[in-house]
Image (cartoon, rainbow, N blue to C red; front, side, top):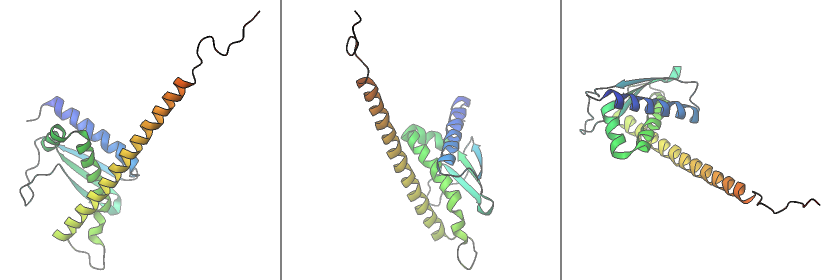
Length: 167
C-alpha cells in the first residue's frame, strides 16, 4: 500500500499538471474529473502490460474522467521522472479530445481494435507535438531571461563614471 505522503504528493503533482495543461491546451470549457486509484487497477492489457491511467469521455458534453493508477504512476515517476508523468497527463487529455473519432462515419459502432490503435497513434503524436513545443517555449523563455539579466548587468552604471563634479 502506498504511504500517505507519497500518495498525496503524487496526487497534487498530477492535479497541478492537469490544471496547467487544461489551460495550455484550451480545454477550460471541458469538465474534467480525476479519480486516483490508490491500490491500482485490476486490469492488464492483452500483451501483459499495465497502464498509468484510463480516460472515459462523453465528448458531446465535453466531459472526461481520468482514473490514475497511483502505484504505476509512482513507479513511472521514480524510474523516468516528472517529464514522463507530464507526458502521461497530456496523453490522457488528448484521449478525451479525440475520442469522438470512434463515431465518425455513416455507421456508429463500437470502437474496433484498429480504432483504438489509431487513436493511440494520434494521441501519442499530439502529445509529442505539445511536449516539443513546451520544450521550445521553455528554452525560449530561458534565453529571454538570460538576455534580460545580461542587459541589466551591462547597463548598471559604475561608480564614478558619468557623474558630474560639483565645484
